[in-house]
Image (tube, rainbow, N blue to C red; front, side, top):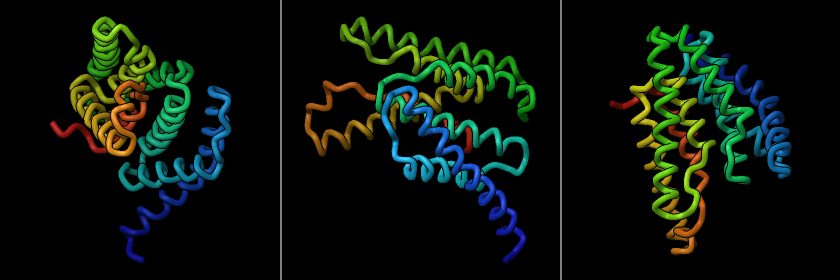
Length: 212
C-alpha cells in the first residue's frame, strides 16, 4: 500500500469508528426531539458515511474533527426536520456561535465576513418566509430554516451564501420532481422539510467551496 493510500485510510478508519458513537448520539437526539425511535444501524451507517466522506476531503488538521461534528449535527437536524418539520435551537444556535468562533482560525482570517454571513443568512430566509406566508396564507419556511441559514453564513462567510441557497433550492426542486413522478400532484400541497436540502447544500459548500 503506497503512502497516499495510507494517508487516507487511517483518518477514514478513525473517523468511521467515531461515527459509531455519533450514530448512537443521533438516534438519542432524534428520539428526544421527536419521540421516534430511529433504527440504530441506519443512524450509524449515515454517521459513518459522513465520517469517511469528511476524512477523504478534509486535511488532517483541526478542520477534520470540526467537519465531523458539523456533518453529524446536520444529520441530526435533517432527521428531526423530516420527522417533525422543525430544526431545534439546541443545535442551530450553537452552530451559529461555533461558526463565528471558528472563523478566527479559518484560512480567510475574516471573522467580519462570517458575522455578516450569519446575519445575512437569517435575514434572507426570514424574508422569504414572510413573503411566502403573505402570498400563500400559510407557513412555508420556519424560523429554524432561517437559523440554519445563519449557521451556514457563520461557517462559510457571506460570499458563499448564494451558492448555498441556490444549491438548496435545486435539491428541493429535484426532491419535489421525484415525488411528483411517484405520487402525483398531491405532493404540491404538502410541506417540505427544507432543512434537509439546506443542510446538504451547507455540507457540500463547506467541503468543496462555492462554485462561483
